[in-house]
Every structure is written in C-alpha cells, then in structure tokens.
Length: 434
Ligand code: SF4
Ligand code: SF4
Image 1 (tube, rainbow, N blue to C red):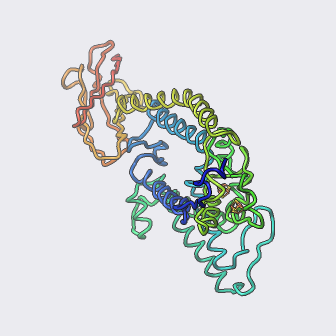
Image 2: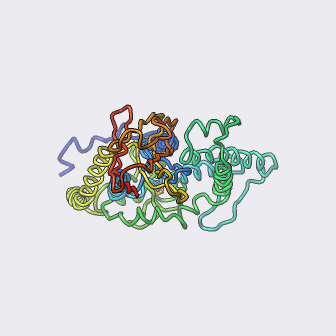
Image 3: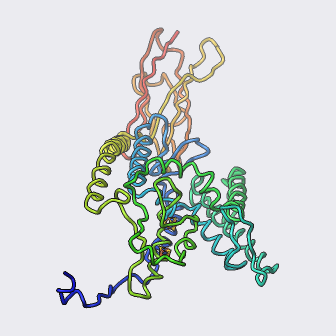
C-alpha cells in the first residue's frame, strides 16, 4: 500500500525536538524556590514554634490545645494536598523540592568539579576515585571550605522555626541582644554539625537507605503514577549507549523503571536522551507518562483517570474536612485569654482574699488590655492595675483583693477583660465570704 502512495516516499524529518535540558533548569528554579520558602514560611509567621511558650505558631497566632481546630485544619489540609501529590506524581517531591536532595546534588557536582568526574560517593559502595591531576591539597581545602560555608549558611534556616526573624538577624550580625538565649546557640551548632556531616559524607545514602518520608511517599505510588516511559520500539538506538544511565544520579537504568524503585522523577534522563537525539532532530526514547505502565494510550488515560478519581474522592473528603477545620479555627480563634484563680494566702482572720488574674496575649503584636470587675460593691475589692500593656505574645498577672467585710455568703462576680479591637473575655468567679 505504501508503494502506491507517492506521499509515503517523501522522507519525514521531525523538527522542533528539544535541544535543551528542559527539566534540568526548571528543577533548579523549583529547588531554589523551595529553600527560599523554607525560610519564608517561619519568617512570615505562617508556621513556627515558640520554644519559650512551648507552642506552635500559625499565621502569627500562638496555638494552644484549645485551638485544636486551627492546628488540626492546617495539618489535615497539608497532608491531603501532599497525598494527592504522591498519588499523582510519585516521589517527585524528592527530585524537585527536597532540600536534602538539593544539597546532595550540589555537593556531588562540586566534588566532581574539584576532584574529578569519578570522585563520587557511590551508592553501590565503590571507593571514591579521585583524578590524579586533581588530588591536590588546595582542592581538598576548597571543597572542605565550601561545605563548611554551606553548613554555616543553611544551619541558619532551623533558627527561623524557633525564633522571630529580628532575633535571627541580631544573631547573624553579632548584635548584643538579651533575647539571644543559649538554646539558640545550641540549635545552630547542632544544625551546622549535622549539615556538614550530611553534605560531606551522607548525601544520597540518606535518601536511599534512611529516609522514612520517601517510604511514606512510596506507599501512595501505583502503576498509574507519573513515571518514566521508554519507547522500546526504538531500542536499537540504545546500542552502545547508556547516556541516560550515567545521567541518573540515583544510579537507576531509566529504561527499566518500576513502581517501587527509587526513581524520583527528576527528568535528568529524559533531558539526556533528548539532548543526544537533538543532533538528528529527533526526540529521545524517554518521556514522562501518567497512566498504566505498558498499555495502549487510550486505556492508559482511562485507567489513570479512574484510579485518580478513586483516590481523589477520599483525599478530597479529607481536604474539605481540613479546610473546614482551618476556617472554623480561624473564625473562633481567641487572641487573648483570661483566667482567675485563688492566690496562695496565709490564713488570717479578717485578711483580704486575693485572686490572681492571669492574662495572655496569643498574638505576636502589642496590645493594651483593660480589666474591669462587675458584681462586687464599690470599695469591696482592689485591683493591682486596670490596664495591662504587652509588647508581644506572653502572659501577665494582676492581683484582685476582695475585702473581708462582705456579708457572709456566696458572692458571684465577673472579671471582664477588653481589647481595643473589640474582643471581650469574661471569667465568672464565686467568692465565699466567711
Ligand atoms: S540515553 Fe536514550 S538512547 Fe541512550 S541508552 Fe538511554 S534511552 Fe537509549
Ligand atoms: S530514572 Fe530518570 S527521572 Fe528517575 S531518578 Fe533517574 S534520572 Fe531521575
């Protein structure tokens, strides 16, 4: 039939095939943005930990056990989004976002640059082969200094999760700040040591043999999850070529990926094969694919869609629950708190009975709270102060003294606390006068 068709004899050349490392640079941009995000999340107050108060901070609000909905909503929303990502795109987080992988790749590249192409920490256990021409003290010193500088720099990131940005800045600029607690120096020292060990010696060994998070992501992978597909019909073009294998820093053969292997969908192998074939104006033999492995295209899409919707239904319910809890948590959030309890007093006849009014500011901004007592006759009580200023989140206490000359019996009164933004907190007290 083809011989009868004159069109079939015209040679076809595919043009516009990829000539660049398409995924490589996109991945580098995403990796840099994730590291920036790792700083911005705590620095913007979106999420951090207040070690002094022993509390989580979400959206610059101190989270107490009573704010369970807010915290629960944040976690459920984040987890459902991530589960959806794992089921659709597999362990793509490792290849495109994980700082451990980003640092390991950087360390591998620098090691190869300074000590030679074969100087790598082999996951298969082969000894590092340093090029004779590069085995110089200056190269080793440069490598060690770069690793130390990176550890000192990235060791600052955990500090943002425990301290406000202005305090971290005081630490970086060696300012004399009384808030610089010993714990901050400890956290920084430990972070730098761990990072240096990680960059110098551990790198992808962590990913391959120790990362629990990778195992968790793997548990959501299926045969339909995004994977590398190989065009086996053109396998003859692979004769004497293993360019994609050398491009894979996880040391896989990209032509034989399977559901439970370590592939992190980085796309380096796709770029490598595309680059190789770009010279002939053809596309490579490797590509990203969503859908059942080794099936025909039409059914691939259908099975992938069915599988995705099956998973999306329960994760979707989880996501709706998370967003609802988060919304309710934000709506019902109490920014201040008041509690009143009997103060320890020496038992003395005719002595005033003291109460402690404990006030808490849960927002990391200044506030002036006004305290008022209702239900007790004028002159039968004394407040240590009526207005309380707080510069940031924290607690302060007042003393309320109730005079002993009240008539014998139970007296119910309210301690009202108001804030300039209209918030009103009330605490009911039952006082027994003897
Ligand atoms: S780079 Fe492409 S052509 Fe070379 S072995 Fe890999 S899949 Fe085959
Ligand atoms: S097989 Fe390809 S996509 Fe998977 S880890 Fe290796 S280079 Fe990256």
